[in-house]
Image (cartoon, rainbow, N blue to C red; front, side):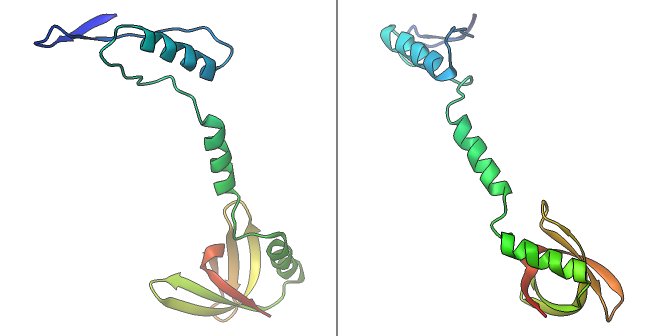
Length: 139
């Protein structure tokens, strides 16, 4: 416990670490709040140790990682193009109003990053394109 600052009205500010034994973080927080509210404290601020909402944060983070762009139907369609080595046309939206139509073959697909590797048959070049840049697959 360290004495930090005195004010003109006789109030003092301390920084403390408090250990509370409890079966869960929520119950420990409840005990701490009960102790602080019963005391003759002018004000208090809990700066760390709160782990409330961690489950919600984890669920939201995992749902953000699973892309809404990729459905089972789209995944099967892309894998079918790769296996058959079929020539297709991909309509791209590169952003800032730039649209492109590319005759290509799909070489590889990374569902984790939603990244397609395309071989442009006219230019004989390989491009890496994110799935969100693709407007349409035309057979």
